[in-house]
Image (tube, rainbow, N blue to C red; front, top):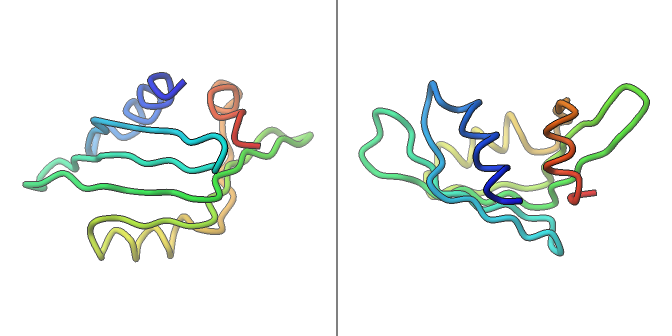
Length: 101
């Protein structure tokens, strides 16, 4: 499951970076990843908490309740642009992430 999620995310991040490791904790609804952004000399770690996929009549949405990163600027960006927002996800992504309900 984590391998499929890693491939899915890498396909969408290919223009800005690459995930080299992704772990999913379904019991605690958390995601941890090791990310290298193009142009950065060192990789960074990102942790997402309270990750949830909700399905409705109009499709599925992903929400993230909390986020932290090994770079202060990335933690701030995640807090401002990701945490608490609902992101539409494709049917394929909702199948991969479906256990986070």
